[in-house]
Length: 136
Image 1 (tube, one colour):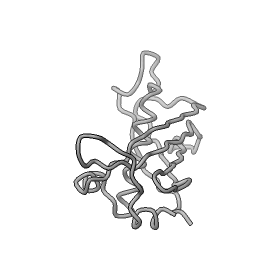
Image 2 (cartoon, helix red, strand yellow):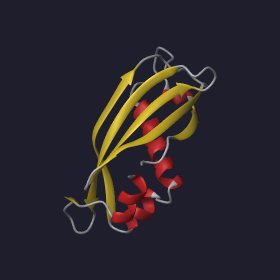
Image 3 (tube, helix red, strand yellow):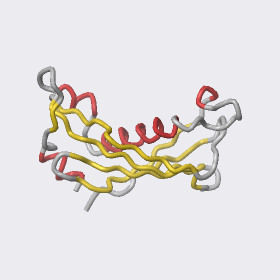
Image 4 (cartoon, one colour):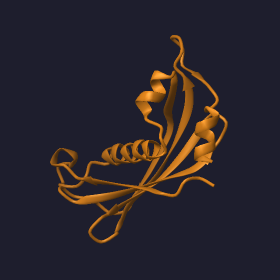
């Protein structure tokens, strides 16, 4: 069974808002990346260390559904889950909520492919068994 949801909190910075005073849409992907990174760290896998070992996890699909706007200085909760694990890929799903009242602001998913970073070509590789086991 995949690990339970991991929660990470972020506070909206002024630079992340657009001319209308709401979080610029692309920043939700940044929040989701932070959630995914923190989930992996909580399981003992730091991205930088994986890369030093010649393993890369590259986003090959990303989707976000925007429901309500977030604004400057709000605290957000990014809830990240492992949705599925395949031989050479992982799907993460996300919920972004306003911390103050639990309002769901956005949902999303990312599919990451496991790559070998050895040599100049980046080739698809099987996820290392310890990672697959802990995420499955």
